Image (cartoon, rainbow, N blue to C red; front, top):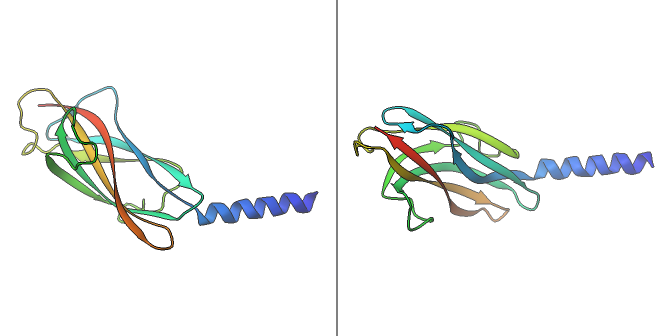
Length: 145
């Protein structure tokens, strides 16, 4: 009985070590608008894939007027990028991690409160064949001047 328990723990631990998480979603801070000229916090959600190894390498932040007609588009303009290697989020665990996006006055100059779709294009490599691809995740952010 004790041997079965130890075997199960060792098997689970080795499986957990060989699996990695990947980014599954993005959400904006709730409760207030983003303000032009300031950073705005966003949260990325991650989940574990027990079947394949994932590595997410970068995120390209694009913006478009809300609602966007194409959820697999980078948007009307690119705002910034995030190098996941430099922030230690290439191989994440299950859960979340936070970052900020800068609301650049050169790009967000409408002069009125405007709702945008933040399009996060996540570049990734998956599996032993090193399959490369891009996933698009979206959230809505309201920006005030």
